[in-house]
Image (tube, rainbow, N blue to C red):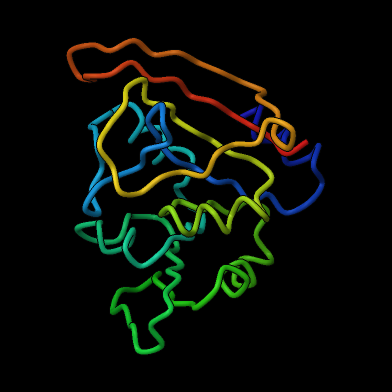
Length: 176
């Protein structure tokens, strides 16, 4: 928690964080599903995003069996007639509109998918990336991280074990 507090104070602005898990070639998913099962990464995602707004595309939202508890879901879609019949779920039609709904919040997460991450690269000031050490067949990808624009500030390696079929690393980047 100390790191998160320092980050917010240091930046002295709204913090927009992209959070994702991607393979070595930036693979995110295939057929609107994840490519791996990493329980510790799910726990980290829950810990970081609970109680906050999460911005996502329609396909990402529809990949959940139900809305994630204790979060405000802001779903971006081009479909003007798209509607969600769940509390704490709001439909918007652009990233700009989604971010305007969080203007009074100090911390907002962008959680995917591929197209939303591409848009998010322009506005985010932090990336929390779980790098899954493997290559996978995928149809959705995380954008390339330009190291001229992003600085790696933390890295934590986790070896595979009985619950995790792949090695993975938590990587934290901030905009330079």
